[in-house]
Length: 356
Image (cartoon, rainbow, N blue to C red; front, side, top):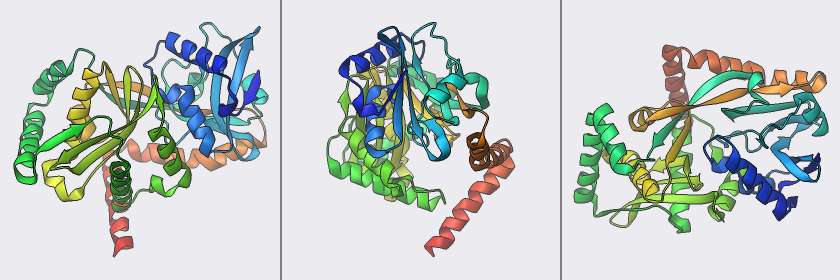
């Protein structure tokens, strides 16, 4: 095994990573590609990749970050919606041996993909990641919506037409390159985080820098994609995410609150699904975490897992103290809808007090 910074991987190793990933029985999430690991490595000094060998050929890759006292975590944890190792079929590993080789006392994950047999036994919770299947084309997806959410689809399309009549001609750009549109999205999203009492991710420098780097990333299986809905050439909703040849990972959607009555975020997602299908992308992954718009748009769910692998020692105790109480508290609230609703209202009330 060798442990490298992501940018130190040679092109042969990157090609092997891509080949192993293509052979795995899982959707080709761009978060699991070497380009994502490299982008995180540019903004997170603790980012590493463990390269496992069988003879002279790489047999697996584990991207991770190393923190205080050897506490490890999936690379990009907190923003990555798909995590795990990329291994050759039949590769046999022991987690304790892997952690020792990486100088880790623990390895935490919160969006471990299904089928990760190395880490799955250590999962503490299972979550649903909501998806839109457009493998058979956008028209087929619309027909599904007409069956499962007829009122939602009819209302959203009517609002799109009204937006065009009242605010100006509506147009959609799937892969916008205008930096001003990305700046508008970041401003809307930051305001949304503050408005709802949640931590502003873009206030964290490394996340803002990561999005900037990925916006410039163009690779067959990991391309930063900014999608924008315009009314009279004014952006009213936007989304930044990553796409592979077969998966669009939905990441940061937001809209201009001035146009809220037109539900521009919902219109945006419908147009993204239509454009993705036209590009040959079969799956839009909206990520874990329940939201009303996801329930309306989804066609199915994928399982993802949260938990950690630890090995005995002070580092494992430190991991437990730093993460487990908060994780268990969040799980307790999520499992009780009335309590979760109260928590959401409390967060919003606190946010209003901070703004007043």
